[in-house]
Length: 329
Image 1: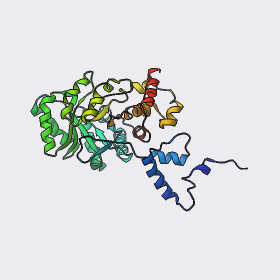
Image 2: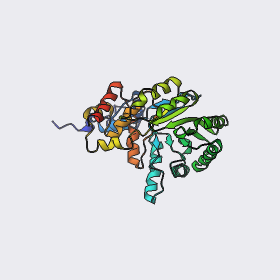
Image 3: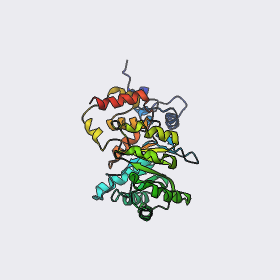
């Protein structure tokens, strides 16, 4: 008897009788998205490919008037896009933005304080014709109303857009002065949502404005869980969307696991093949999180990050198992 091969059990290579391979693939991809199918080492190569093509998990923007939703993984640009570099590096960054959109993501997060990042993002979106497909979030951190308005107007020019999806007061700087300005911009249709950010030690102060904003952004990671006590529950209660900054803890989480193999249970249960994916799955598994925004200037890492947003999200017990990996490392 001849030995069976992977293709003998791969329905994408041998679809059911009377069904074309193209039709089966189309059905499989749509079914994968609906059922949360994920790839694992136990799946045939064809089905693993189908699983990888499953759409990203979507989360609602609670204060959207039309039920708008966002993919649970986006892109941050704080360190990676701030400085101009050689042509090859700049093209790699452009491909990261392209991969974000083509891979099913939408949210691109930047800020006026990230050196040249707003300008670079604006150039990439225009050159690649991606503005209409991108949910653009940016920030300003100025004292005084007029300085805030000047910064916001500069963001429109640098991002090469007539409207900005989300504008933040960055790191709570003069927030009470700027929120009325942002309300006015929103009323005029120049921004669609507004919020406040903090990635420092005083993040809990964000709760002061939860009744009056659409989005909040703060640092949260597998080893920085303080937001689970107040910020995340309050955001859920108040209907405030949450962007999670620094999900890799400025790379300290990945550095801690460098050279270590991802455990079999993580691959089999969650389809995670790297610690970066596990760190993102931990974030995305919290129901109060809207979008995690890891930064990268590597298109392959962008694709890997996006894949963490597909398929099954970890439940509470699995999230604790993920956290234990870092606790015990």
